[in-house]
Image (tube, rainbow, N blue to C red; front, side):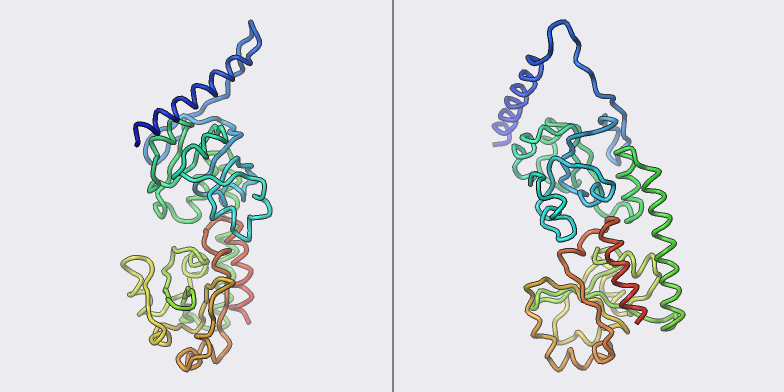
Length: 301
C-alpha cells in the first residue's frame, strides 16, 4: 500500500512539474524562489524564504496570528470558532490523505512530529515538523516566526504578552492573596479532566505567565501526564479557590445541579469561569489574547 501511494504521489508530481515546465516561455529561464536553510529540531530543511502556499497540518493558528495566508489547514483549526470565518475559503487537508495536500501544490508543509505519512509529505514539498510540548508556548511562536521571516515580530509579541500577563497576575494575587489557587477542569458532561500548566485552555497563562497556583493534589495528579481524569463524585476534592470550566456548546451541564458541585466553595462564591473548549484548545497568540481577557476579568471580580 505504501509503495502504491508513493508511486501515485510521484506520478502526480511529475505531471504537475511537467505542466509547469511546458508553460515556461521558450528561451527564458523560470524565476527561482529564494531558498533558505531552516534549522529544525530534526536537522536543516531547505525552505522558500517567502513561502506563498503553506499547508499547515499543525500550528495553523500560530501562522494565522502572523497574518500568514495558508493554502490548507487541518479540520480542527478550520472549525475553531476563533478562526473559522477567516479560514472559510481555505482547503481542509489531512496527513492521512496526502493527495489532499498535493492538490494544494504547497511550497511548504508544517506538521507535527507524531503525524503519519511524513515521508510522503516530504516528497510533496519541504516539510518542517515540530514536537508538541518540546518548546513552551512563547518559544513555539518565536520558532514559527523564524520559519516565515517574522522572528522580530514574534519576539516583540512574546515579551509584551508575558509582561502584561505577569502584571495581571500580580494584581490578582494582591487582591485575593498570594496563595490563591485555580483548578482547570474540562468536561463533556460525563467525564472530567484536570489540566496541568501546559495543556491549552489557557493553562499557560494561569500557571506560567500569571504565576498562579493549582491545589497541591491537582499538581500531584497531573505531574505524570499533564492531565488527570477524575469522577464527578470527587470534584470537590480538587477544586481550587477558582475553577476554570472548559466545556462545549452541547455539553450536558446537568451535573452542576448535583449536591457535589453545589457544595464546592468556588461554586458557592460564584468563582467559576466557563470557557468554550473549541475556542480554547490551542496556545497561539489569538487564543491566548482571547483567554487573557476572560481570565483577567473573571479573576479580578
